[in-house]
Image (cartoon, rainbow, N blue to C red):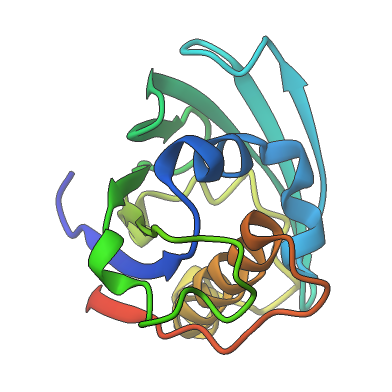
Length: 184
């Protein structure tokens, strides 16, 4: 992909990879993590080849992204690729990081180990099929890209924070430290 932008961020969840992975894999739960993802439907069992339709709405735009799971290696990795209208792919990756647990446990006394959860997305914003997105009159794709790109990082951060709360079984998200490794 030419002109590719990349988001790579990570955080720690106070659970082992085996307990964290099912949450990462459960795309149908993702609308709970962000206000812009309205619903998710699935065709498949969640393994490689499964296709997810993710319906987004933001500003004056609505769009359904179709994502295919390309590889699943529990509890380490889930790779995906958009199959319509935009060149994009990414991965959720989970690595053990037991040294991240504070002395005395995670504060709840529930976990003596931790995992680092990575979210990566690579995409070419100008590969978008202009006919697939119903742009408001007099609004250019350049303007939409300028408005959307800063929000993508914030959305990724919000999803990861709320995902960690679910993984850890917390009613309210704790302050998680997000490490931004790369951003557009």
